[in-house]
Length: 612
Image (cartoon, rainbow, N blue to C red; front, side, top):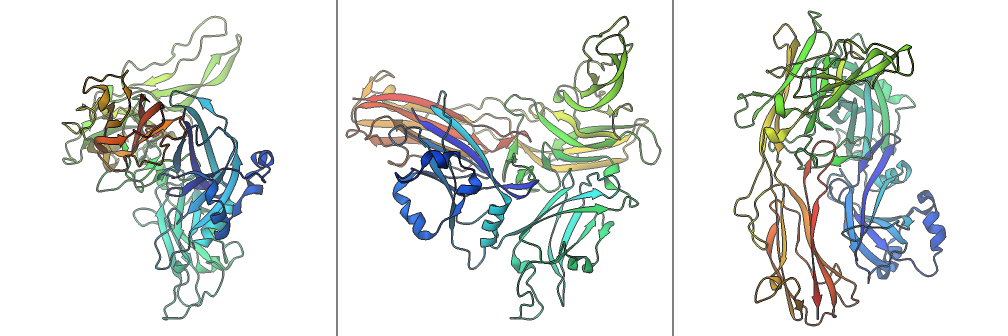
């Protein structure tokens, strides 16, 4: 049986700000006889973290058990067979040739390797073998020290209102460094729905001077001040450069966190209706305008980030659709009338051919709560809360008149709002807060961009018809219930693909030359495989066995890929010298698809054979 070690790596900049560790190498080492394995396995990682010198890395080479690289989301998988490994504790190191978000430099820093901890996995037996999962986030103290070696700097921040500390979304934040002659622009970005932002830079950004060969910033970090403005250019905050000379902003380190507040006397952009996110992805900053795919992982402020560059969207493993998020107030800001909103879509190629999202394109999603009186425990009426749900079918459900008679009354049914034939949703005037904020609709994309089970064409060949998704435009409209659209914004392009991946595996000897799945093999093995999808993330073929002379997971080389459309073919093996034993042929793959909150978890196929 194989041992499958899966994990995800992230690192903190601040207590509430982290990033996924993409494209770093995870190395597993056997322990040496002189090491106190038990003590190391129960030790806190802060006591075992160590930056290794080159000779220390070299001395550990003979104990290397396995290594692999993390993907764009910080995920990794290591597959070990029972001859390589028996379930014991192992040491985990990270090797960084570079680090996430680090721009290339003419003279890059030498690679670094550091030890994190000793892990004794708690293995659980599954269909694929023994499984365990390890989710770890490196502390800010250690990760910022590693970043400093690569000259990477980051500003993690949030923009809120000064009075109520409410998030300000969709505003541009620019950072500057005070210099003796000419202030330096550090960088700029846009806040997400929670008001958060992040700016990456290197020391080159604040060491620039107008004189060739002269560097006036001889040591230390930048002295920071900020400007915040709306998308239309209205300045909400304009700090003077002298702010950068205050003790909390002067000579900051390479990891700096800040909260900026804007004057509430300025018309706040968050009081307007706004379409902001698909799932956890910001429609302004997280999508590639050309392809409609995502350009980064989200949400970037937590250790549970998902997605990554070049992801498309689908309805998720359970087909529930994707959440369209934003804000719609109860009242129109000008007329004071009750508000309503809707979503529409169109093919990206014909962006004006809009279709209302309504009916079977909508499934239930919670958008808020509202207070009601209810007999919860006895005959006493108490104030409690009723869930508000937007659903595409049925009739609007409201528990009025309320039950009569002695309490306790039955469980509180939700208040269900069904959009009208044109897709309009009326904001509940009894709901909490100032309107609906967060999920505004759950869009069943398969009823707009159909998918299904993609046809295969037999193991060893690519499908005769390769199924692809389609890019659409998403439009949000809001206005008074008396009619008329007073606000609209859109996501110009989002790629949707609801087709399953083609994944086929067979052994030629099981169906040709009189063979069948019960045939014993002696001299040759021909593995037929097919993996295909428009947004294939990665796939690989492996052969595992309990035999000490089996090929394991490294030798011979197996087909593997990380490009769109996957691959197909027949891999020939000379097994005449392999030890007589049972073997497993394993084909695994995953797609670059997300429903905005959870990613495709991938799939695998397994074939077994016996070598005489």
